[in-house]
Length: 307
Ligand SMILES: Nc1nc2c(ncn2[C@@H]2O[C@H](COP(=O)(O)OP(=O)(O)OP(=O)(O)O)[C@@H](O)[C@H]2O)c(=O)[nH]1
Ligand SMILES: [Mg+2]
Image (cartoon, rainbow, N blue to C red):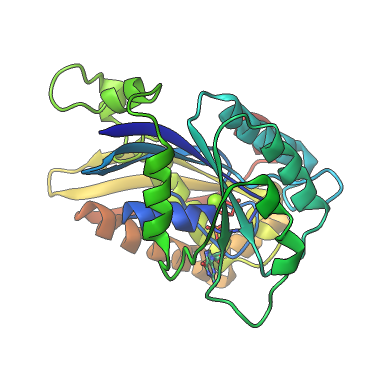
C-alpha cells in the first residue's frame, strides 16, 4: 500500500479543481470558467486498492505583472496560501498547464515556483480535448526539465489512468501523509473537529463547504467583475424536526452597487443563485434544504477572510 501527498499547482483556470473533482468522483472543489476561483488550498483523500493519496488543490498562482481580478490585497493573500501549501511536506507535485493559452509572464512565475520544488514532478498538459487552439510548442521545453509528461482532459476524463499509475509508482511505501490519513481511520480517535469535516475533504467543515457551493454559483451566474467583490459565509446549519436542513448564509460584497446587482430586480438574481445552490446542497446531502440567503455590503471582508 502506498500513501502520499500530491500537490496540484498551476496558473489560474488550468483545470486543477476540475481534475480533482473528477478523480475523486464528487465535487470537493468549486470550479468556474473564471480565473482565481479557488481561494485556499483544498485537501481531499483519494482512496483505492493501490493506496491512499492526499491531493492538495491550490489556488492558481498569479503574477504581480498581471492585474488580478480580486485586487492585489486579496490576490497576495491567496498566493501566500499556495506558497504555504508548497512548503508543506509533499511527496510529489503535479504541474498543470493549459495548452490553449499562451505561455506568458504569469506562467513564467509558476515555472519559477515549480523549479524550486525539490520533489518528483509530473507535467500535466490539460484540456487536450480542445484541439483547434494550441500553444503546445511554447511548452515543449518543459519536457526537458520534467521527466514525466501526460496529456489529459480533466473535464472529459481522458488519459487519467496512466497518470494516476505514474503517481502511485512515484510515491513511497509510507510517508508523512500517514498522520493526515490516519485522522480518518475508522472508529476511535476521531475528534469532533475531524468529524465536522466533509469526507473526503480533509480540511473543510460543512459550513465552509456549503459557503463554497454558494460562492461557485456567484462565479457562474454573475458577470466578469462581481464575483471578485464577493465572499460567502454560512452562519447556521440546523436540522429541523421535520427533517428539513435549514441553512442561513450571506453573500458579502464590497459596494452597494454590487449588492443591488446581486439582489437583482425584485430580488430575482439572489433567488436564482439561492435556488441553484439549494438544489446542489440538497443533492449532495440527500436532504430537503431551506436556504435563507441574503446579500450584505461589507467593504472590509477582504481584510477578515482568507487571512
Ligand atoms: N475543455 C476543457 N475545459 C476544461 C478542462 N479542465 C477544466 N476545464 C475548464 O476550465 C475552467 C477552469 O477550471 P478550474 O478547474 O476551475 O480551474 P483551476 O485551475 O482550479 O482554476 P483556479 O481555481 O482559478 O486556480 C472551467 O471552466 C473548466 O470547466 C478540460 O480538460 N477541457
Ligand atoms: Mg481551482
